[in-house]
Image (cartoon, rainbow, N blue to C red; front, side, top):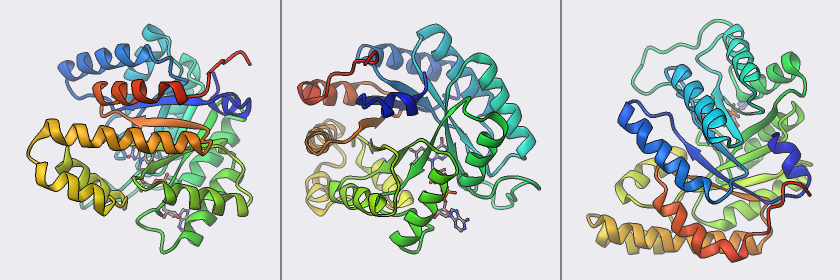
Length: 298
Ligand code: FAD
């Protein structure tokens, strides 16, 4: 089912993001998580893609298993910097063949563990080129989502730049967007306003990262340029070595963040799960009465 069409009908979206595990044990853990989160009737779930292309087979395998064995609507992430266009088309053909309707078109980052990495000849330099490639080769076969950055992508010198290139991805054919994680909703609200002024009219779903491990989140946040509010830092720092206390503070924070987003009429909530279900289940349980009814037949 195409996510763009669901959102256009005004259906509120709840979604969960997973990554393709490296081991059999990891895969078992992931599918336990999927089966727990399935109970929340997600609009879709998504599976990430290694920017260097290393997860090509693993991402496809997990996407296919979720689609065929769990019967959930799946979105496959696809990054373009490490592939030639022909390879990207090949990957997309495989998704077409197995009945996947949704692609998150991304550029990806240069692999950190490979300083000699050079994009192959004929690859797409930016996500906008992947969006164009999908539309040129496959027309409306897929619903295409793109990433957006309420605090600005680390490579963008300012928000004007950020919005200009985001708008290009939308004019190239993206029909919705999911944001990078953020912890201060005012960044999202300002971003939405700026996007509307720039004529960007696709749904922009906020990405929610429940904090369960302070050291890990500090690293993630600094890598992607997300600011952790000072009052949250002050609560987390003193308990940073006590995982249960960190998770309690992180989950309480995410509940309040989601409640505020819901009050302000967001089109959906996308949870970064890190392949675990506990935090997301607790957050959903706390906010479920405020989540709009999700009738896909409307
Ligand atoms: P782009 O949209 O191409 O933008 C990258 C930067 O280039 C921005 O600063 C933009 O303003 C600038 N830019 C764009 N076009 C031009 C141009 N023509 N000229 C000059 N500058 C330009 N990474 C993964 O590896 N795998 C994943 O599965 C994955 N999933 C993600 C899911 C979400 C929801 C998000 C928010 C991010 C995800 N990422 C993933 C991270 C993403 O790959 C990185 O943030 C990457 O650095 C940028 O990807 P993009 O698609 O946003 O790039």
